[in-house]
Structures are given as structure tokens and as C-alpha cells.
Amino acid sequence: MKHKTVPLCLTILPLLAACAGAPASKSTPDIAAPAAWRNAAAQAGDTPHAATQTDWWRAFGSRELDELLARALQGNHDLAAAAARVDQAYAALRMADANRLPSLNAQAGAGGDGRLGARRTSSASGASYTAALRASYEIDLRGRNRALSDSAAAQLQASRYEREASRLSVTGAVVNAWLQRGALAERLAIADANIASAERMLALVAARVRAGAAHPLELAQQRGLLAAQQRQRAELRQQHEDSHLALALLLGQPAADVHLGVRPQSDTGSAVPLQRLILPAAEAGLPSALLARRPDIAGAEAQLAAAEADVAAARAALFPSLTLDGALASSAKGFSGLFDNPIYSLAAAIGAPLFDGGRLAAGRDLAGARRQELLAAYRRTVMTAFADVERALNAIGSLAIQRSAQDEELREAGRALALAEARYRAGAENALTLLDAQRTLYAAQDASLQLQLARLQAAVALHQALGGGWQQGS
Image (cartoon, rainbow, N blue to C red; front, side, top):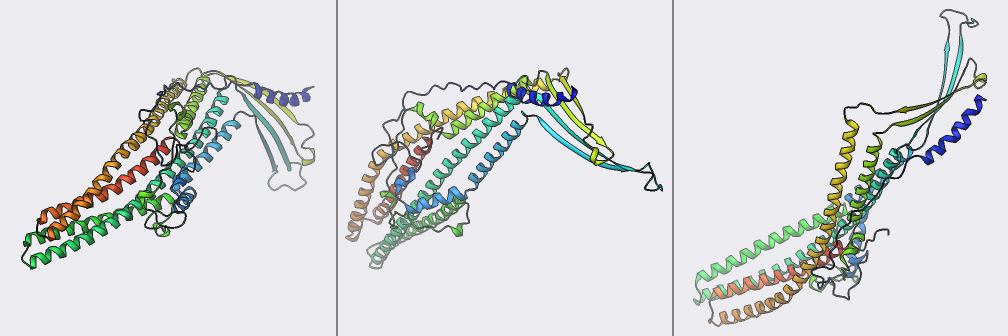
């Protein structure tokens, strides 16, 4: 009758495992979303409004940008680290799940004993063999192991959302770096054109000085203007090289291995001026829909769910625990008789914390405080997401107004320089007016290009703020 107890015990253990514990409660705090965006009228895009797509950057029509993003998604070190964190979280979940199952250990041994100096046939010598099979299982009376497993599952989900958030961040950073580099290349071209114009003006002023029609002061002033423009060009050249290094870092490659055109390239391979790049379309939608479109919000929510499970586990640790142990062992002088007369043992033990100096209570309080911290972080993440969209929409609306005024400023600055040069040649204007007209035109050209860069980057920021086409559950 006793030998029938072992299989009976092994049958009961899985049933206890299935019935033990209750899932940790999960709740998402209610966030009051605004009814509409403050700057809803400002939408990004030179094409009709459309929902943000995961490949929204293709609206720029650049094969070079597509290739850069493919290289960045494959070689970026931050994305590699995020993928490794997902693997870590998956391993942690497997470990947590394993704690909910019975453990089974096998042990075998062999040994010999004898008297020193005795003959081999002496009855005092011989070999002995042992074998044992031990099983142990903690019945999850209060759901502690279940809660720890739920926490690990939520952490795994959070790490996946964080990986998607990193992907979105890297994508936006690559697009911005590509636009920045293209803008600096065009600003260098503008600087070269203005240096050539200043050199032409310098030759004109020098000729007038030699003819006695101008004062040497005018010649010194024009030389100073040319030197200032050459200095600014050197500064732009440095910034252009730095932008190349920043882009190479995003790709995870040495700068020497990154070969790019001087300006953004279209699908046909031809250079596209920054002013003619098409803004990728985006539809902001309703603020309440943003909660399901941002991977960082989903990640913060998963972290909060993990913290709630940790609180449940910490509370369960304050209560008694029940452990079942079973063993099947045998020993013999000969290997052939090792399994002739096995013996088994069964035991059940209940343990309850009586005094631990407040360690378990402090662990419960720590888990509760951690949950409160993550609750505040979740709310901050949601509020930050709303602010990101509002900021991008505000920038798009403001920059559209600035562009109209800047176009007018640029046209008038070009006309002013042409008139000032003609009047100076005729002797009807002094050199100060000519110098001021040159500075004004150069500043207007540079500002116009930087304004277009800001418009493009504001559109990129809106796509990032809207989640880049990501949807929870996709």
C-alpha cells in the first residue's frame, strides 16, 4: 500500500500547481485627454492629410534616405541594446514561470571502502551505489509566484514597447540628421556665392579707389565684409563635417564608411534643393487616440502593470507558505540490486514569518512606493505626448506664416542689392549702403534655407509625436 502513495503524490502536484494563486490585478489610470488640439488647424504635409504611416519618410522621395534608414535600423547600437533587453526580459519571464512548477532533482553516487593492507577477498572491502529522486513544490497559496510571473510578463511587454520607441527615435534622428546635413551643404553653396559676390564688389571698390572716386576706408570695409563671410563659411564647413559624424554614429558605422551626396538625392539620383522637398503628410486626429499610438505610453503602462504585480507579490510574502517534498531513494552493494528495495518519503511543511525585523513589511512598502512612482511617470509620459503634438502643430502653423514673410524679405533684399550696386557704380550711393545690402541679402538667403529646414523638421517632429504610424497591438 505504501508504494502506491508515490504516483498518487505525483498526480496531485500538477493539480495543486494549476489551482494555486490568483492573477495580480491590473488597472490603467484614467487620463483626461483634451477634446481637441489647440493648433488643430496646423497639419503637416504638402499633400492631402492622411494618417501617419510607418514609412512616412518616403514622402521625401529620396533613395539615399531610404538606404540610410535601412542601415541605421540594422546597425544602430541603441536598437541593438534595446533588442538585448527584450531577450533579457524573456529569460526573466521563463525563470519566473519555472518557479511555479515542481522541481525534480536526481542524484547518483558510487563509492568503495576497504581495510588498508587487506586482501581483495576480504569481507571488509566492497563497492556501494546510491540513487535518489527528489521532488519539491511550493503551493502558491496567496498567488505570490503567480504575481511574480505576471510582473515578468509585463516587463517583457514593456521592453518590447521600449524597443519600438527606440526605433521611432532613431528613425526621426536619422531623418533630422540627413536634413541637417543637406541644409548645411546648401548653406555652404550660398556662402560660396556670397563670397564670390563680395570679391566682385571688392574689385569694384578697389577700382574706384584707384581712380580717386572712393576713399580707402570703403576698401577696408569691403575687405572686412569678405573676411567675415570667409570666416562664416569655415564655421559652416565645420558644422557640415560634424553633421556627417552624427549621422555615421546613428548608423553605427565609422564616418569614413558613410558616403553621401552633398545634397538630398531623389529616386532618380539627382540633387533636390531643400526648398523643393515635399513635407510628409500627417493627420493629428483626436487627442484621445494618441494613447494607442505611442509606444512609450504603452511601455509606461506595462511598467505600471509590472509594479502592481510586484505589490501583490510583496503582500503575499507576508503570509504562510506550504511546501511539499517527496523523495525516492535506494542503495545497494552491487549495481544490479540498486533498484530492488527503494524507499520513499513524503513531507509537507508550512512556514510563516514571525519576526524578521520588518523586512517583509518594508518590501511591501517599497513595492507600493515604486508603483506610485511609475504611476506618476505614466501620467507624465501621457502629458508629454500631448505636449509633443501641440508643440509640433504650433511650430508648423508659425513656420508657415514665417515662410510667407521670409519669401518677401528675400525678394526685396535681392532688389535692394541690385539697386545699391547700380547706384554705387554711378557714384550716387556710398559704400555703407552697398555693404548693408550685401549683409542683408546674405542673411535673408541663409534664414530662408534655415526656415525651410525648420519646417521639414517640424513635420518630422509631428510624425514622431504621433507615434510614427505605430499602433498598440500591431
